[in-house]
Structures are given as structure tokens and as C-alpha cells.
Length: 156
Image 1: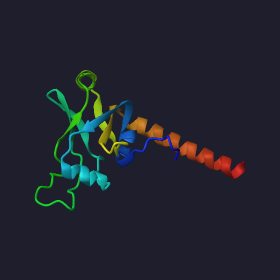
Image 2 (image 1 turned 120 degrees about the vertical axis):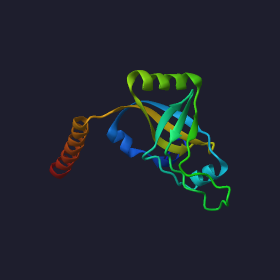
Image 3 (image 1 turned 180 degrees about the horizontal axis):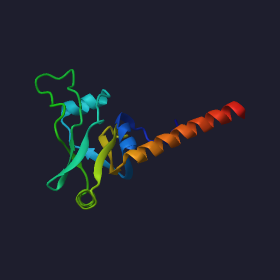
Image 4 (image 1 turned 90 degrees about the vertical axis):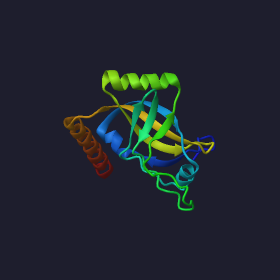
């Protein structure tokens, strides 16, 4: 790794989102967390696979993201699947709400990571759902690329 590369520790990745959606516009958002939640994230424990982002009023909320309880905490531990507010600029929120209501887009979390300063960030994307034939095309293209690489490696 180069010395000038950003030191981001990826905690959770939503690989299924790339298969189920056409991801268009990526945005970095902060997350409003409790103390035990950030400690659990620093341990590298989280799951955003079946989570999604939804507008509630004039703010964005991460729903169904699983941050397991921090094992060193006592009775003041957090609720694992509670709704978590996303920290975005007002223009970004208005743009996302407009895309969801007007164009029928979905907002999916793509990656949860800690940035250089140790703050938890969520990479979200404006997404459009794929149809079954789109998924088949992507799968066929990936298989062809794999077979082509194998042929070139064996023959060439």
C-alpha cells in the first residue's frame, strides 16, 4: 500500500447491492451513533447486507443495519437494529428525496468504513433496480470474461 493512500478500514460491504441494482450516484454520509456502537464498529462487527436508506421527514435514516452489541458494555448497550440518522448536507438530502419520490429510485448502503480520523462513514448510492434479464446479462458477461482469461492463460 502506498504511503499517500487513504487509510480507510472497511467494516462491512454490501456486495449484493451491485448485483441487484444499477448504482449511479455515490455519496459519503456520516452516521449518528451511540458510544457502544462505535466501539463495536472498531472491533469490525457490522452487517449492512439487508439494510436500506429511507427518508423520514426531512432527514435520511439507515434502517435494518445490524451492529451487534458491544461485548464489554453492560446494561447500557445499544439496540442492534435501531434506526440510525445519516448526517448529510441539506442539498444532498433534497436531491436524494427528489430522486426517490420523483424517479422511483432506491438508496442503498454500499460500504461502511472508518475514515482516517476514525469516524464511521457510510457510502450510499442512488440505485435503480435490475430486472432478471439484466442480472443474467451481467452473469453471462462475467462468465465470458473468466473463460476468456482462462483461454488466454492456457493458450498464450
